[in-house]
Length: 464
Image 1 (cartoon, helix red, strand yellow):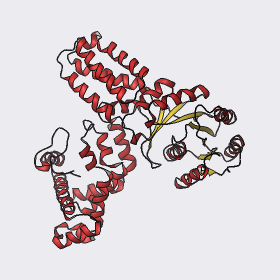
Image 2 (cartoon, rainbow, N blue to C red; image 1 turned 90 degrees about the vertical axis):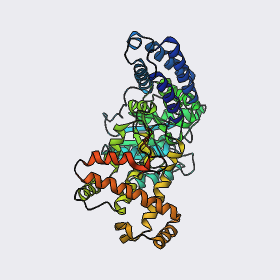
Image 3 (cartoon, helix red, strand yellow; image 1 turned 135 degrees about the vertical axis):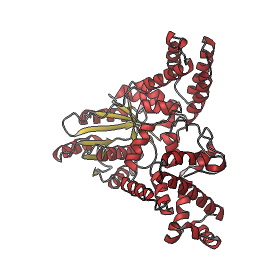
């Protein structure tokens, strides 16, 4: 998300930082670029206008004009205004109520409400240790109830069974009574997708709200809808007392205009965002971290959280001890590292959160995608245990067998073995005295030409 915006802003920021002194003219030129970048990202015009006005006003202030580093001072202002635009704090869900806390999902057809119910249920169960019940009041869409049932089974969350011939209001009364008797901490209610111009359906969701008295009503919006998302948010906000917004399909949206506009239009915080199709690909929305990523400054906090949540710490500890004892780094260890990186969304996802890695060329992003990880894993899986432990035994005929078994070319096998040797050298340097310094020097030499500013070795492939 925000790829286009990040790219444009990065260029503008670079130009500003290069200025020894700022004038009204070069600030105006920079603001024109920022304005174009926001409009290209499909940010609503009134939102863009307000944002530019705030930044310009502050950029022309005394503090910036007299600053020793005026370009950096303006970058700081842009970052602060982006945070303000998206909402300064991530507001948690309200569980300070008589159990169960009812969370109702509202939104347009196709916004991804049902999947979001499952994702939120999983997050609350695993991270907050809440006892959650899910229910579908969508009696109109074929298989909507079945879809939620399947997802609930997948994430081990209790599903309340309903039928298509029931009335949504009757379902709401029944499930609320059941959730109270069974001492659930939270009840998440999936409602039917509706058009904001459909008065009958909007009336129905108001009745559901009246019966359920939810502590949270979340508006689920497809981030790829752009301007339509803003109009829909407006209509729903007028009909219901929304408490927050969930952005879905952010992984497929390169512009990100909805994220920057919805908060401004509704005044409601963006609480969560869906980052992929899996039920685990769902996270709290942190405006500060998002602003940092938009400006190419990375998001190290999110990366640390992901590493803690998604890596096998026992395996990592075992590997660290093994390397320390100088017992060597095997292809099986290499495969473990690849699998753990893939669990974190692949190398591209990791790099997106590292400072200075924004705006990587498309060919590099393609090189670090999931498919590349899967290919490397399948090559290692096609080897015998002996070959994985002692790769030196892999001769020409073995390479042919491995390539055939993994559906790849001999060149791919050679490339993997070359990358593995580089990784092995790095690990060896780490095990000795002053290991980290040696490893960094090793990184600098990988690919035969040192590390360029983007951090990628020229012509050497990815140094996994």
